[in-house]
Amino acid sequence: MKIAIFPGDGIGPEIIIQAIRVLEVLRSDGLKFELEMGLLGGCAVDATGEPFPEGTRKLAIDAEAVLLGAVGGPQYDMLLREKRPERGLLDIRKALNLFANLRPITLHRDLINASTLKPEIILGLNILIVRELTGDIYFGEPRGIEWRNNQRVGFNTMIYSETEISRIAHVAFQAARKRNHRLCSIDKMNVLECTQLWRDVLNQIAKEYPDVELSHMLVDNAAMQLVREPKQFDVIVTGNLFGDILSDEASMLTGSIGMLPSASLDNQNKGLYEPIHGSAPDIAGKDMANPLAMILSVAMMLRYTFNLESSATRIEHAVKETLAQGYRTNDIFEPGMKKVGTAGMGDAVLVNL
Image 1 (cartoon, rainbow, N blue to C red):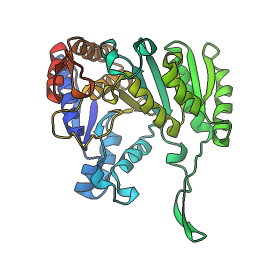
Image 2: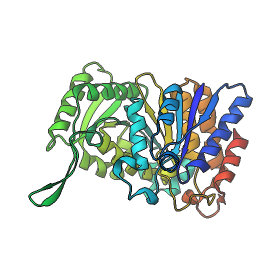
Image 3: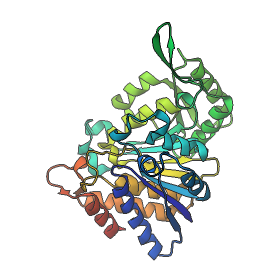
Image 4: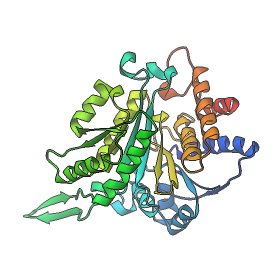
């Protein structure tokens, strides 16, 4: 297995170290893989002037899977948009055709008090958000800022083709078949023609999956329902913009964005795996970051790209056991628990692994 490693910026290098330690334990049990490090994001800008340099592109294309820490930082905010670290993230998704983003929103029972919602609202929470990742307003053209009638005007284009909608719909329906056979599609068809097409295509494809119950919900209502009655959802499918917002909202149902992994896949299950949190520059280098989302991203990589279900489950069980033993980083700490730093949480997971 050839795995490209992009630590990135901020806390990225710290949490990537813990992910590599987990892989090394599995290597000692016979798992065979090659790791190659590369630059993506702000660190790549510092070294080469580009957030996604050609060497990184080649490494990502040649690898079977990519592990990414995090990108970005306030020191890059004044750069031209195409030179900012976040551009590297968009570019690698496009280069690898990573159109399907899977974000499991799962509540660990031992962290129920970390959430701001009442326990009875979130106990047993288990949602999968399927987000289209290479289309929508993030990539649509034309876009820009220009002068019109003596004032600046900013504009972006929300656009989806039938093909783009169809392929993410099939991913979502197939995921629902492996769960509770319920799929909720999120759109804004009452005011956006682009998402009217989204709904039309979903209804058409639903005929191929008679065993899956398809429902629809407008995005503003979905945002409300996620905090009102989140357990009504099983699998959610939506576009790039809405998925970006709703998945971050849903992450806080579990108490911390630092707990949740993600997978971005192409049509052959080659993937980029990363925690859904950002680079957290305010705590970078302080041994405070929660590495569990990064470690759980390794589990998703082993499951989806390499079909190593037993190894993936083993990592997930080790994380659950670590939480059950009371180990907590600062973001999920509560009185009576054992506060540890990034390395300390890694140590505890490795013991249980």
